[in-house]
Length: 359
Ligand SMILES: *[C@@H]1O[C@H](CO)[C@@H](O)[C@H](O)[C@H]1NC(C)=O
Ligand SMILES: *[C@@H]1O[C@H](CO)[C@@H](O)[C@H](O)[C@H]1NC(C)=O
Ligand SMILES: *[C@@H]1O[C@H](CO)[C@@H](O)[C@H](O)[C@H]1NC(C)=O
Image (cartoon, rainbow, N blue to C red; front, side, top):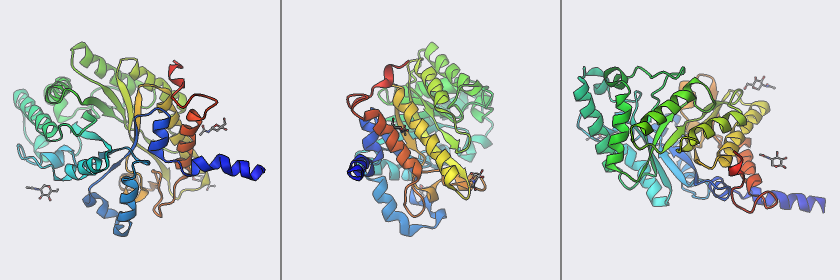
């Protein structure tokens, strides 16, 4: 009898899936970014593609996707005035075929920028023209397909001052205003986001984000959201309280927030302890997003460890996502499901999101 009750309690969790549970907990979506096959090739795992694709396209698991690379400037405007949407279209069409929301990423960013932008000596007037043309042509191509656009990505240094990108050097903070203003003119209905990393706990960088949002609002320029990339490390990820505090501080300005690139990397090899830290980190992000009404959703930066960017950038670290190479799930997968399920279990609330009035 005890056993039966135990099994019955576990059953709903065993069959639960991320997007399905997230929706029940009041989020708009739970998603995963993905890449065109070109980027996956370096993992050398072609035999895994069919299984990978089946999970990606399972809308109970993922209700949203983002092209990790294909819409970046390097791919979309490799030469001035020469546009190429091949890479970005691969992911956009996956979303369309499956009825998944598409978060579009990213219009103005200093990294993965086409070399010609940095190699040219610009007058302010000429660089303004370049930004307007890039934002306009890329957004027009994807018009009607995106739930949101990351309009400006990573404009801040860790101390909250502006990053000395080519855009900032020539135009100062005007480039941010110009990018958002142009984006709003091209597609007034899409959500326009400022997106960055290390802004998932209060501090100087988070203050910089608040300053950018206020600056845009003060000038009457449309800004709809703050994207929290959330590239964490298992042993020192932001706490639940930190994430709640910072999300609320953005939301207090009247914008929505989203967790846009979540992964939690581990010092390899993984062990039980580090996987438990990772499970805790993922759980805290899920809980924070559920508790803050303005947090619309969570996007993993891919979902399958071998296709993550982490091992290529952080030596000795990896396993940051929710599916291991053999397609078994991380403990973190179940902690996210459990966190969502806790929020939706009948005694605490009536199947709707409850705690959003906590603050
Ligand atoms: C556009 O991009 C794709 C994918 O990167 C590439 O294969 C193709 O050659 C490009 N097209 C042009 C006209 O450069
Ligand atoms: C597990 O890995 C972490 C690093 O992620 C390390 O600090 C810890 O000592 C390891 N524990 C064991 C029992 O090996
Ligand atoms: C879910 O709720 C149970 C009972 O209150 C608690 O023990 C558990 O830690 C919670 N799990 C999560 C992931 O919040």
